[in-house]
Length: 533
Ligand SMILES: Cc1cc2nc3c(=O)[nH]c(=O)nc-3n(C[C@H](O)[C@H](O)[C@H](O)COP(=O)(O)OP(=O)(O)OC[C@H]3O[C@@H](n4cnc5c(N)ncnc54)[C@H](O)[C@@H]3O)c2cc1C
Image (cartoon, rainbow, N blue to C red; front, top):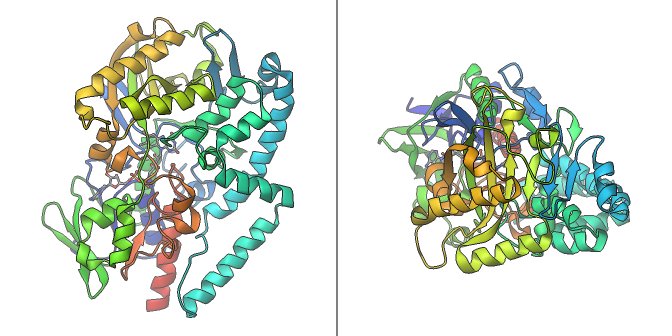
């Protein structure tokens, strides 16, 4: 294909979502992907003979139910199941916290009766704010525009709509909203709870993909960001896509193709063609060109603007700001093939806790030290590890009787402090992560049959996630909402005519939500109808 209505750069889940919506509305759409497979960070691959797992993203909650319905993802093979328990946090002293329907209160009461009572109050507070966020997820945030044209009028209405949504909150809830957008999770949790494990349960969400201390201002928002999801109608719950995260993007690709979208893999975009201040198509790695009315980017905005578009084609002030777009996740991701299930000292043997997100980080102080250590040393010598064993819920991933686990490890430095390459330290750090799990579940290391380890450098090189940033840009206040990816461009439109953003670098940000793809499609269709009726 060398001419189409829309060309989308990147077949991540957002690119696929956007493609499907545009094709459903009758546009001709091509998606071009640099990797050999579709899905971006939401893929399932065989990482050890006979063992498959979600390679990067590994657990589902944020995927928007409207998108699941509109794209008929269930008809295309997607099935999402709940974890049998939500989270399990063992402590070195043998105590533990186990959360999930019907178990949280009992577990909390054993640790701290005071926290058991506060937990309900805080969860309700978070839930009320998350409910408001849910209303913002599928709409473009108010965009700042200069002048008094049609765009200004449209945005004035958008701002009014936003204000109306916020008015549904009581004054006290609006205060909480401000706290959650600006404060540190650590401070807020210390004010409310007394037990370290309870604080760690919430605090973990504040540092996932966020290279910062839980005491860093703004970390409370990252905690909130992980709370607006749901699984099969149950709010705030996390689950598993049968077949791994690749099942989501396989279903999306099927939906898109079913509506006529052409998807080309193994052939990335080398350059966006710019003519008369507008995006006019793309040049692929193999030299082929695709001309299009609309060029839609699903890649990290800094990657788009500093690598795929000639600098002199962009407004200088825009480019200067984009060069400072902050990409910073301190994550190290492992997949391990296991001969047997781990047995945790705090709760030995099999049980529902093994289907939970198992958080090895017993306190906020531990998380804070992990970040400090990573800054000084390059990686934390006592890292934060979440273990998830999806084969406890899904027998398609490992041979019978054997298992796969995802290890999502924080904190490692995106760039090592002495300038050393992550290629040199990958195996050493992978050994440390295995040893960290083994300290809580003796025998774990011996059960590892094979492993895959992805450093921040691997995430950048293999997936195009600059700085290893899992969200396509830090979720800090200056990069959120009307400022994502930049004030004046929160409406999914880039600084060139015909250029749009549909990836996680646009509102509402990272996570397997499908929301930026959905919202961008709406804006493109509106612009298309304005031009062509
Ligand atoms: C290790 C890790 C763990 C995570 N865990 C979770 C989780 O458990 N749950 C959750 O909800 N979220 C999780 N996330 C976040 C989530 O996966 C991402 O925010 C989301 O998948 C990004 O989707 P996207 O479509 O916006 O972009 P991507 O998935 O990054 O897709 C962009 C696509 O563009 C392609 N591309 C790059 N350059 C080019 C080019 N020049 N030409 C053509 N194509 C190009 C890339 O190969 C990629 O396929 C995780 C992310 C990572 C990395």
